[in-house]
Length: 183
Length: 280
Image (tube, rainbow over all chains, first blue to last red; front, side, top):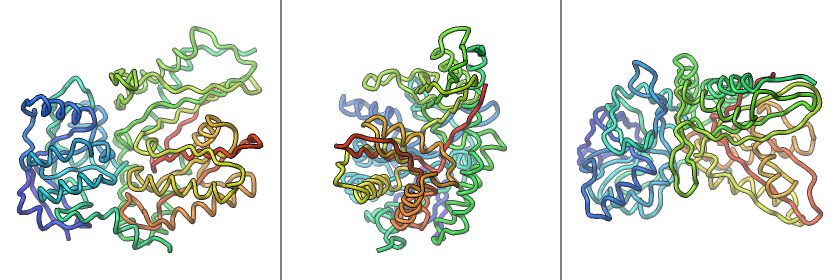
Protein backbone atom coordinates (compact mmCIF):
# COMPACT_ATOMS: atom_id res chain seq x y z
CA UNK A 1 0.00 0.00 0.00
CA UNK A 2 0.99 3.60 -0.48
CA UNK A 3 0.16 6.35 2.00
CA UNK A 4 0.69 10.09 2.16
CA UNK A 5 0.77 11.27 5.77
CA UNK A 6 1.44 14.54 7.53
CA UNK A 7 3.80 15.07 10.45
CA UNK A 8 3.40 15.45 13.42
CA UNK A 9 1.60 12.15 13.03
CA UNK A 10 -1.86 11.03 13.93
CA UNK A 11 -1.38 7.92 16.07
CA UNK A 12 -4.59 6.35 14.78
CA UNK A 13 -3.27 6.69 11.24
CA UNK A 14 -0.05 4.87 12.14
CA UNK A 15 -1.94 1.80 13.29
CA UNK A 16 -3.00 0.96 9.75
CA UNK A 17 0.56 1.00 8.39
CA UNK A 18 2.09 -2.41 7.75
CA UNK A 19 5.61 -3.52 6.84
CA UNK A 20 6.38 -3.03 3.17
CA UNK A 21 4.06 -0.04 2.81
CA UNK A 22 5.50 2.97 1.04
CA UNK A 23 4.83 6.19 2.92
CA UNK A 24 5.39 9.80 1.88
CA UNK A 25 5.74 12.17 4.84
CA UNK A 26 4.97 15.89 4.59
CA UNK A 27 5.20 18.41 7.41
CA UNK A 28 7.60 18.87 10.30
CA UNK A 29 10.08 16.27 11.52
CA UNK A 30 13.20 16.46 13.70
CA UNK A 31 16.73 15.13 13.27
CA UNK A 32 18.75 13.57 16.06
CA UNK A 33 21.60 11.08 16.03
CA UNK A 34 24.16 9.68 18.48
CA UNK A 35 25.33 12.76 20.36
CA UNK A 36 21.88 14.43 20.53
CA UNK A 37 20.34 11.22 21.87
CA UNK A 38 23.03 10.96 24.51
CA UNK A 39 22.31 14.52 25.60
CA UNK A 40 18.55 13.97 25.65
CA UNK A 41 19.06 10.91 27.83
CA UNK A 42 21.27 12.93 30.20
CA UNK A 43 18.53 15.57 30.39
CA UNK A 44 15.94 12.91 31.25
CA UNK A 45 18.26 11.35 33.85
CA UNK A 46 18.64 14.78 35.45
CA UNK A 47 14.87 15.26 35.48
CA UNK A 48 15.01 18.09 32.94
CA UNK A 49 12.74 18.91 30.01
CA UNK A 50 13.73 17.73 26.53
CA UNK A 51 14.46 20.53 24.03
CA UNK A 52 11.71 19.21 21.74
CA UNK A 53 8.45 17.46 22.48
CA UNK A 54 8.28 13.79 21.56
CA UNK A 55 4.47 13.66 21.41
CA UNK A 56 3.34 12.47 17.94
CA UNK A 57 6.63 13.53 16.45
CA UNK A 58 9.01 11.89 13.99
CA UNK A 59 12.76 11.64 14.63
CA UNK A 60 14.96 11.21 11.58
CA UNK A 61 18.34 9.64 12.41
CA UNK A 62 20.39 11.91 10.19
CA UNK A 63 23.33 14.30 10.25
CA UNK A 64 23.44 16.33 7.04
CA UNK A 65 26.39 17.61 5.07
CA UNK A 66 26.55 21.44 5.00
CA UNK A 67 24.12 23.29 2.72
CA UNK A 68 25.48 25.20 -0.25
CA UNK A 69 24.31 28.83 -0.57
CA UNK A 70 20.64 29.09 -1.41
CA UNK A 71 19.83 25.52 -0.45
CA UNK A 72 18.03 24.36 2.71
CA UNK A 73 20.35 21.42 3.41
CA UNK A 74 23.17 19.30 2.01
CA UNK A 75 23.13 15.56 1.50
CA UNK A 76 20.62 14.09 3.96
CA UNK A 77 20.25 10.31 4.07
CA UNK A 78 19.59 8.08 7.09
CA UNK A 79 22.21 6.78 9.50
CA UNK A 80 22.24 3.35 11.16
CA UNK A 81 19.39 3.23 13.66
CA UNK A 82 20.79 0.54 15.97
CA UNK A 83 23.17 3.05 17.53
CA UNK A 84 20.12 4.82 18.93
CA UNK A 85 18.60 1.60 20.32
CA UNK A 86 19.88 2.35 23.80
CA UNK A 87 17.93 5.63 23.89
CA UNK A 88 14.85 4.98 21.71
CA UNK A 89 12.57 3.13 24.19
CA UNK A 90 12.52 6.08 26.63
CA UNK A 91 11.62 8.49 23.83
CA UNK A 92 8.91 6.17 22.51
CA UNK A 93 7.45 6.00 26.02
CA UNK A 94 7.30 9.81 25.96
CA UNK A 95 5.10 9.72 22.87
CA UNK A 96 7.54 9.60 19.96
CA UNK A 97 5.43 8.31 17.09
CA UNK A 98 7.99 7.34 14.48
CA UNK A 99 11.66 6.89 13.80
CA UNK A 100 13.30 7.11 10.37
CA UNK A 101 16.64 5.40 9.86
CA UNK A 102 18.13 2.28 8.35
CA UNK A 103 19.01 -1.16 9.66
CA UNK A 104 17.84 -3.54 12.33
CA UNK A 105 16.55 -2.64 15.81
CA UNK A 106 16.99 -4.35 19.16
CA UNK A 107 14.31 -6.47 20.87
CA UNK A 108 13.85 -3.66 23.43
CA UNK A 109 13.06 -1.14 20.71
CA UNK A 110 10.63 -3.60 19.17
CA UNK A 111 8.88 -4.02 22.53
CA UNK A 112 8.65 -0.24 22.92
CA UNK A 113 7.27 0.13 19.38
CA UNK A 114 4.52 -2.41 20.16
CA UNK A 115 3.84 -0.94 23.62
CA UNK A 116 3.40 2.56 22.23
CA UNK A 117 1.88 1.64 18.85
CA UNK A 118 4.69 3.46 17.09
CA UNK A 119 6.38 2.81 13.76
CA UNK A 120 9.92 2.52 12.40
CA UNK A 121 10.50 3.65 8.84
CA UNK A 122 13.54 3.12 6.62
CA UNK A 123 14.76 5.67 4.14
CA UNK A 124 17.15 4.47 1.44
CA UNK A 125 20.66 4.41 2.88
CA UNK A 126 23.25 6.15 0.75
CA UNK A 127 20.70 8.16 -1.23
CA UNK A 128 21.40 11.44 0.59
CA UNK A 129 21.43 13.63 -2.51
CA UNK A 130 18.06 12.32 -3.68
CA UNK A 131 16.46 12.51 -0.21
CA UNK A 132 17.65 16.09 0.26
CA UNK A 133 15.26 17.09 -2.53
CA UNK A 134 12.29 16.28 -0.25
CA UNK A 135 13.53 18.66 2.45
CA UNK A 136 12.40 22.25 1.92
CA UNK A 137 13.61 23.91 5.12
CA UNK A 138 16.02 23.17 7.95
CA UNK A 139 16.62 24.97 11.21
CA UNK A 140 18.81 24.05 14.19
CA UNK A 141 16.57 24.04 17.28
CA UNK A 142 18.84 22.52 19.95
CA UNK A 143 22.41 21.50 20.75
CA UNK A 144 23.91 23.74 18.06
CA UNK A 145 27.42 23.04 19.35
CA UNK A 146 27.08 19.46 18.09
CA UNK A 147 27.43 20.63 14.47
CA UNK A 148 26.00 18.03 12.12
CA UNK A 149 24.68 16.18 15.20
CA UNK A 150 22.53 19.11 16.40
CA UNK A 151 18.76 18.70 16.55
CA UNK A 152 17.22 20.18 13.42
CA UNK A 153 13.63 20.92 12.62
CA UNK A 154 13.00 19.92 9.02
CA UNK A 155 10.13 20.78 6.75
CA UNK A 156 9.62 17.86 4.41
CA UNK A 157 7.48 17.43 1.34
CA UNK A 158 6.59 13.87 0.26
CA UNK A 159 9.65 12.45 2.00
CA UNK A 160 9.80 8.78 0.86
CA UNK A 161 10.11 5.98 3.45
CA UNK A 162 9.18 2.31 3.79
CA UNK A 163 7.58 0.74 6.86
CA UNK A 164 10.17 -1.74 8.19
CA UNK A 165 8.66 -2.23 11.67
CA UNK A 166 4.94 -1.70 12.19
CA UNK A 167 2.98 -1.14 15.41
CA UNK A 168 2.54 -4.89 15.84
CA UNK A 169 6.31 -5.41 15.77
CA UNK A 170 6.46 -7.08 12.36
CA UNK A 171 9.95 -6.64 10.93
CA UNK A 172 10.50 -6.36 7.18
CA UNK A 173 14.25 -6.92 7.61
CA UNK A 174 13.41 -10.38 9.01
CA UNK A 175 10.75 -11.39 6.53
CA UNK A 176 11.80 -9.88 3.17
CA UNK A 177 15.25 -11.52 2.79
CA UNK A 178 13.72 -14.97 3.38
CA UNK A 179 11.76 -14.65 0.13
CA UNK A 180 14.96 -14.31 -1.87
CA UNK A 181 17.38 -16.48 0.13
CA UNK A 182 18.69 -19.61 -1.61
CA UNK A 183 18.16 -22.53 0.73
CA UNK B 1 65.72 13.15 -7.99
CA UNK B 2 62.47 15.01 -8.72
CA UNK B 3 61.10 17.67 -6.37
CA UNK B 4 57.42 17.88 -5.44
CA UNK B 5 56.05 20.77 -3.38
CA UNK B 6 53.80 20.04 -0.40
CA UNK B 7 51.40 22.79 -1.60
CA UNK B 8 50.75 20.74 -4.76
CA UNK B 9 50.04 17.69 -2.61
CA UNK B 10 47.59 19.73 -0.50
CA UNK B 11 45.76 21.06 -3.58
CA UNK B 12 45.53 17.60 -5.13
CA UNK B 13 44.13 16.04 -1.96
CA UNK B 14 41.52 18.80 -1.58
CA UNK B 15 40.33 18.20 -5.16
CA UNK B 16 40.27 14.41 -4.69
CA UNK B 17 38.18 14.69 -1.50
CA UNK B 18 35.54 16.68 -3.37
CA UNK B 19 35.66 14.50 -6.49
CA UNK B 20 35.38 11.21 -4.58
CA UNK B 21 32.33 12.43 -2.65
CA UNK B 22 30.38 13.47 -5.75
CA UNK B 23 31.31 10.97 -8.47
CA UNK B 24 31.84 7.22 -8.36
CA UNK B 25 34.44 5.58 -10.59
CA UNK B 26 33.12 4.16 -13.93
CA UNK B 27 33.54 0.54 -12.76
CA UNK B 28 31.24 1.20 -9.77
CA UNK B 29 28.65 2.86 -12.01
CA UNK B 30 28.76 -0.10 -14.41
CA UNK B 31 28.23 -2.82 -11.75
CA UNK B 32 25.32 -0.81 -10.36
CA UNK B 33 23.78 -0.64 -13.84
CA UNK B 34 24.23 -4.40 -14.28
CA UNK B 35 22.50 -5.00 -10.96
CA UNK B 36 19.48 -2.98 -12.12
CA UNK B 37 18.93 -5.43 -14.96
CA UNK B 38 19.54 -8.61 -12.95
CA UNK B 39 17.68 -7.82 -9.68
CA UNK B 40 14.59 -10.02 -9.27
CA UNK B 41 12.80 -8.19 -6.44
CA UNK B 42 10.54 -5.29 -7.49
CA UNK B 43 11.37 -3.41 -4.28
CA UNK B 44 15.05 -4.15 -4.90
CA UNK B 45 14.75 -2.73 -8.42
CA UNK B 46 13.07 0.36 -7.03
CA UNK B 47 15.93 0.90 -4.56
CA UNK B 48 18.57 0.40 -7.28
CA UNK B 49 16.76 2.88 -9.54
CA UNK B 50 16.74 5.40 -6.69
CA UNK B 51 20.47 4.88 -6.15
CA UNK B 52 21.08 5.51 -9.83
CA UNK B 53 18.98 8.68 -9.66
CA UNK B 54 20.88 9.69 -6.50
CA UNK B 55 24.21 9.44 -8.35
CA UNK B 56 22.85 11.61 -11.15
CA UNK B 57 21.65 14.31 -8.74
CA UNK B 58 24.94 14.19 -6.79
CA UNK B 59 27.02 14.90 -9.90
CA UNK B 60 24.70 17.44 -11.49
CA UNK B 61 23.81 19.47 -8.39
CA UNK B 62 27.06 18.94 -6.48
CA UNK B 63 25.37 17.36 -3.46
CA UNK B 64 27.49 14.62 -1.83
CA UNK B 65 26.33 11.13 -2.86
CA UNK B 66 25.93 10.30 0.84
CA UNK B 67 25.75 12.69 3.79
CA UNK B 68 28.39 10.56 5.52
CA UNK B 69 31.29 11.93 3.54
CA UNK B 70 33.54 9.69 5.57
CA UNK B 71 36.86 9.73 7.31
CA UNK B 72 39.48 10.49 4.66
CA UNK B 73 41.73 7.49 4.10
CA UNK B 74 44.72 8.56 2.01
CA UNK B 75 47.10 6.18 0.28
CA UNK B 76 50.31 7.61 -1.04
CA UNK B 77 52.72 5.76 -3.30
CA UNK B 78 55.89 7.80 -3.20
CA UNK B 79 58.50 7.16 -5.87
CA UNK B 80 61.92 6.60 -4.33
CA UNK B 81 63.35 9.28 -6.63
CA UNK B 82 60.97 11.94 -5.29
CA UNK B 83 62.05 14.67 -2.88
CA UNK B 84 59.20 16.35 -1.02
CA UNK B 85 59.82 20.04 -0.35
CA UNK B 86 57.98 22.84 1.43
CA UNK B 87 57.10 21.39 4.81
CA UNK B 88 55.79 18.39 6.65
CA UNK B 89 54.06 15.74 4.49
CA UNK B 90 51.46 14.73 7.08
CA UNK B 91 50.53 18.36 7.66
CA UNK B 92 50.21 18.88 3.90
CA UNK B 93 47.85 15.91 3.68
CA UNK B 94 45.72 17.15 6.58
CA UNK B 95 45.58 20.65 5.09
CA UNK B 96 44.30 19.07 1.85
CA UNK B 97 41.57 17.22 3.75
CA UNK B 98 40.70 20.42 5.66
CA UNK B 99 40.35 22.47 2.45
CA UNK B 100 38.46 19.73 0.64
CA UNK B 101 35.93 19.22 3.43
CA UNK B 102 35.44 22.90 4.27
CA UNK B 103 35.44 24.32 0.71
CA UNK B 104 33.56 21.33 -0.70
CA UNK B 105 30.63 21.47 1.76
CA UNK B 106 31.46 17.98 3.01
CA UNK B 107 30.40 16.76 6.45
CA UNK B 108 32.86 16.96 9.31
CA UNK B 109 32.62 13.54 10.90
CA UNK B 110 35.86 13.18 12.84
CA UNK B 111 36.23 13.43 16.62
CA UNK B 112 39.61 14.25 18.14
CA UNK B 113 39.60 11.56 20.81
CA UNK B 114 37.66 8.30 20.50
CA UNK B 115 36.45 8.54 24.11
CA UNK B 116 36.14 12.29 24.68
CA UNK B 117 34.48 12.68 21.25
CA UNK B 118 34.88 16.32 20.37
CA UNK B 119 34.41 17.05 16.68
CA UNK B 120 37.59 18.47 15.12
CA UNK B 121 35.46 20.68 12.90
CA UNK B 122 37.40 20.13 9.69
CA UNK B 123 37.41 16.34 9.26
CA UNK B 124 41.10 16.06 10.08
CA UNK B 125 43.19 14.13 10.69
CA UNK B 126 43.27 11.82 7.68
CA UNK B 127 44.26 8.19 8.00
CA UNK B 128 47.46 8.21 5.97
CA UNK B 129 49.33 5.23 4.53
CA UNK B 130 52.58 5.79 2.68
CA UNK B 131 54.46 3.32 0.57
CA UNK B 132 57.83 3.78 -1.13
CA UNK B 133 57.79 2.55 -4.74
CA UNK B 134 60.07 2.78 -7.78
CA UNK B 135 60.15 5.89 -9.94
CA UNK B 136 59.84 9.64 -9.54
CA UNK B 137 56.07 10.05 -9.30
CA UNK B 138 53.69 10.51 -6.42
CA UNK B 139 50.38 8.68 -6.68
CA UNK B 140 47.63 9.72 -4.28
CA UNK B 141 44.38 7.87 -3.63
CA UNK B 142 41.72 9.45 -1.43
CA UNK B 143 39.11 6.98 -0.20
CA UNK B 144 36.52 8.62 2.10
CA UNK B 145 35.10 5.82 4.27
CA UNK B 146 31.63 5.98 5.75
CA UNK B 147 31.06 4.28 9.07
CA UNK B 148 27.67 2.61 8.53
CA UNK B 149 29.60 -0.07 6.68
CA UNK B 150 32.95 0.36 8.46
CA UNK B 151 31.25 -0.55 11.75
CA UNK B 152 30.22 -3.91 10.28
CA UNK B 153 33.76 -4.88 9.21
CA UNK B 154 35.60 -7.74 10.92
CA UNK B 155 38.96 -9.43 11.40
CA UNK B 156 39.04 -13.21 11.94
CA UNK B 157 42.24 -14.91 13.08
CA UNK B 158 41.59 -18.35 11.58
CA UNK B 159 43.88 -21.35 11.91
CA UNK B 160 45.46 -23.15 8.94
CA UNK B 161 43.19 -26.16 9.51
CA UNK B 162 40.14 -23.91 8.91
CA UNK B 163 41.25 -23.66 5.28
CA UNK B 164 39.26 -22.13 2.47
CA UNK B 165 35.97 -23.26 4.01
CA UNK B 166 36.79 -21.23 7.11
CA UNK B 167 37.51 -18.21 4.93
CA UNK B 168 34.18 -18.60 3.13
CA UNK B 169 32.31 -18.87 6.43
CA UNK B 170 34.06 -15.79 7.80
CA UNK B 171 33.08 -13.71 4.76
CA UNK B 172 29.48 -14.91 4.86
CA UNK B 173 29.24 -14.29 8.61
CA UNK B 174 30.47 -10.71 8.25
CA UNK B 175 28.13 -9.92 5.36
CA UNK B 176 25.16 -11.61 6.97
CA UNK B 177 25.69 -9.75 10.26
CA UNK B 178 26.08 -6.48 8.35
CA UNK B 179 22.71 -7.00 6.66
CA UNK B 180 20.69 -3.81 6.17
CA UNK B 181 22.96 -1.74 8.45
CA UNK B 182 25.74 -1.50 5.88
CA UNK B 183 23.59 0.00 3.10
CA UNK B 184 23.52 -2.91 0.68
CA UNK B 185 24.26 -3.56 -2.13
CA UNK B 186 27.73 -3.71 -0.64
CA UNK B 187 31.21 -4.00 -1.99
CA UNK B 188 33.10 -6.58 0.05
CA UNK B 189 36.85 -6.10 0.43
CA UNK B 190 38.66 -9.14 1.78
CA UNK B 191 42.26 -9.51 2.93
CA UNK B 192 43.65 -12.98 3.46
CA UNK B 193 47.10 -13.60 4.94
CA UNK B 194 49.85 -11.43 6.39
CA UNK B 195 49.48 -10.49 10.05
CA UNK B 196 46.54 -9.10 12.05
CA UNK B 197 46.92 -5.53 10.76
CA UNK B 198 48.18 -6.51 7.32
CA UNK B 199 44.99 -8.46 6.63
CA UNK B 200 42.89 -5.39 7.49
CA UNK B 201 44.96 -3.20 5.20
CA UNK B 202 44.71 -5.77 2.39
CA UNK B 203 40.94 -5.71 2.78
CA UNK B 204 40.85 -1.91 2.69
CA UNK B 205 43.00 -1.85 -0.44
CA UNK B 206 40.84 -4.54 -2.05
CA UNK B 207 38.00 -1.99 -2.05
CA UNK B 208 40.12 0.25 -4.30
CA UNK B 209 40.50 -2.40 -6.99
CA UNK B 210 38.37 -2.27 -10.17
CA UNK B 211 35.12 -3.97 -9.16
CA UNK B 212 34.39 -5.13 -12.70
CA UNK B 213 37.56 -7.26 -12.89
CA UNK B 214 38.57 -10.31 -10.90
CA UNK B 215 41.85 -11.03 -9.16
CA UNK B 216 44.85 -11.83 -11.35
CA UNK B 217 45.32 -15.04 -9.36
CA UNK B 218 42.97 -17.62 -10.88
CA UNK B 219 42.14 -19.46 -7.63
CA UNK B 220 41.34 -16.12 -5.96
CA UNK B 221 39.26 -14.94 -8.93
CA UNK B 222 37.27 -18.18 -8.63
CA UNK B 223 36.80 -17.59 -4.90
CA UNK B 224 35.61 -14.02 -5.54
CA UNK B 225 33.04 -15.26 -8.03
CA UNK B 226 31.83 -18.04 -5.75
CA UNK B 227 31.52 -15.69 -2.76
CA UNK B 228 29.60 -13.10 -4.78
CA UNK B 229 27.08 -15.78 -5.74
CA UNK B 230 26.82 -17.05 -2.15
CA UNK B 231 26.38 -13.52 -0.75
CA UNK B 232 23.71 -12.72 -3.30
CA UNK B 233 22.01 -15.94 -2.26
CA UNK B 234 21.54 -14.57 1.27
CA UNK B 235 18.50 -12.63 0.05
CA UNK B 236 19.35 -9.41 1.95
CA UNK B 237 18.96 -7.35 -1.22
CA UNK B 238 19.15 -3.61 -1.96
CA UNK B 239 18.49 -1.58 1.18
CA UNK B 240 18.16 -4.89 3.08
CA UNK B 241 14.57 -5.06 1.85
CA UNK B 242 14.99 -8.45 0.16
CA UNK B 243 16.42 -9.27 -3.24
CA UNK B 244 19.13 -10.89 -5.28
CA UNK B 245 21.65 -8.04 -5.18
CA UNK B 246 23.27 -8.01 -1.73
CA UNK B 247 26.77 -7.32 -3.03
CA UNK B 248 27.99 -5.69 -6.22
CA UNK B 249 31.45 -7.20 -5.97
CA UNK B 250 33.79 -9.22 -3.80
CA UNK B 251 37.44 -8.21 -4.14
CA UNK B 252 40.02 -10.36 -2.40
CA UNK B 253 43.68 -9.45 -1.89
CA UNK B 254 46.19 -11.91 -0.44
CA UNK B 255 49.66 -11.88 1.09
CA UNK B 256 52.02 -14.58 2.40
CA UNK B 257 51.40 -15.51 6.02
CA UNK B 258 52.84 -17.50 8.95
CA UNK B 259 52.81 -21.32 9.11
CA UNK B 260 50.54 -21.10 12.16
CA UNK B 261 47.98 -18.62 10.88
CA UNK B 262 45.24 -17.70 8.42
CA UNK B 263 44.16 -14.09 9.08
CA UNK B 264 41.02 -12.95 7.24
CA UNK B 265 39.74 -9.39 7.26
CA UNK B 266 36.43 -8.35 5.76
CA UNK B 267 36.09 -4.63 5.08
CA UNK B 268 32.52 -3.92 4.16
CA UNK B 269 31.71 -0.93 2.02
CA UNK B 270 28.28 0.30 1.00
CA UNK B 271 27.32 0.92 -2.62
CA UNK B 272 29.01 4.32 -2.28
CA UNK B 273 32.47 2.78 -2.69
CA UNK B 274 34.38 6.03 -3.15
CA UNK B 275 37.91 6.73 -4.23
CA UNK B 276 39.67 9.19 -6.47
CA UNK B 277 43.24 9.02 -7.73
CA UNK B 278 45.68 11.75 -8.67
CA UNK B 279 49.32 11.72 -9.74
CA UNK B 280 52.03 14.31 -9.34
